[in-house]
Length: 173
Image 1 (cartoon, helix red, strand yellow):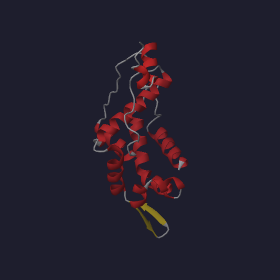
Image 2 (spheres, helix red, strand yellow):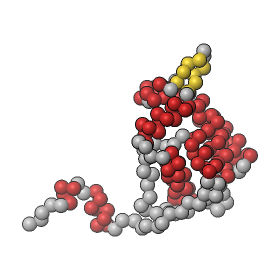
Image 3 (cartoon, helix red, strand yellow):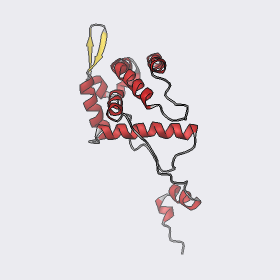
Image 4 (cartoon, helix red, strand yellow):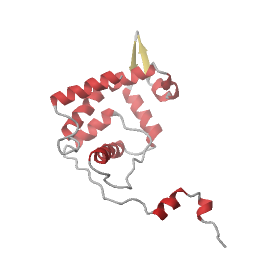
């Protein structure tokens, strides 16, 4: 699986450019191309997952898989519907993609420049599918991501955030 992802990245880098620009930001054109490359092999990546033990936990993938002769085929429409229903409970797909791409920008800024803000977090437990990220990026070709800077918590805020609620409201009399 890793080799397919690596090949998709190398192909994108050769055709469109690297994911990171000279200004240490995401190259949106390259990211869009990379997501399209991954979307093209997404079904194959999920079919490869069938052969691992991890998939035993993912009943949605198992129920949306058909074995045709020696090949394994994933019903992507059924899988997509079940995946979003199970993992995002009615949240619009474009909102999940927006936050995921925001997370990519956050990570790049964090590692290459400085932390863009101390209060942003990815609000979901799962990532969107590559197909949906590619579609989201196509619909937003001039995407601009920015963060409103908020500094780190004060020492008192940090302490209050780790205290057990019973300890925090303790009567000291």
